Image (cartoon, rainbow, N blue to C red; front, side):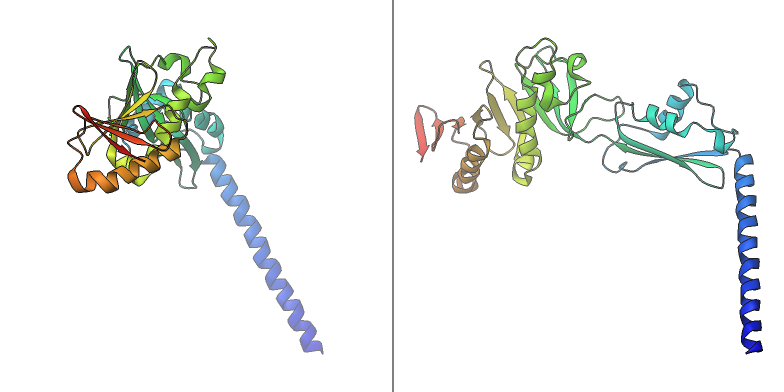
Length: 276
């Protein structure tokens, strides 16, 4: 019985010693951290294989221009939240996260915006719209190969750059008609469909504010109309590609019209091909 009690006492003493050492080490680590200077800024562009809008040296330059003093400053005194907030304001940055490590490194992780399409308005002003409907400018570093939307588009970048594309009509301070929400709706459907994202390379807005699709395969124009019954129109177009383009190439047609309900009309010189 005495041996058992002695064993329990010894175990308790050992655990208390370990606990004391652990607490002391924590205190020592915290003291070290309080005195640790930032000796390196490590920038990781997480999607650098996909987009190339932002370079690490540009992030360093941006932080310097904003007046942040980082290197050789105490790690625990760095305004991490403020730095992160400023990084997230960069047009090409979708998300920035920063953290420090015990070896004196400030880590910055960047996810860039992924452009879904590029708009060229009637004034030849050009900008991207990303998958989250955020507008952002072109870059000198990189030109993304994405769907081009051009023609009769009266949507200047400066007016909509702080708004979501699909909310543009409600948020337009001029209370005028805008095509950005419809463009986003159509482009989003193309982008998320493996067939159409590979086939459609351009969307043109004609004088009637209707959409014309320019495919990579088939020397014809697809008269799409507005975005009403969008899914039904793509179903008809898919069937046309399956039945006609896959067999003949579709080069004999100048226009393919999917605007009419329950009907697809193809123009070939002075004749029409109709499919119910």
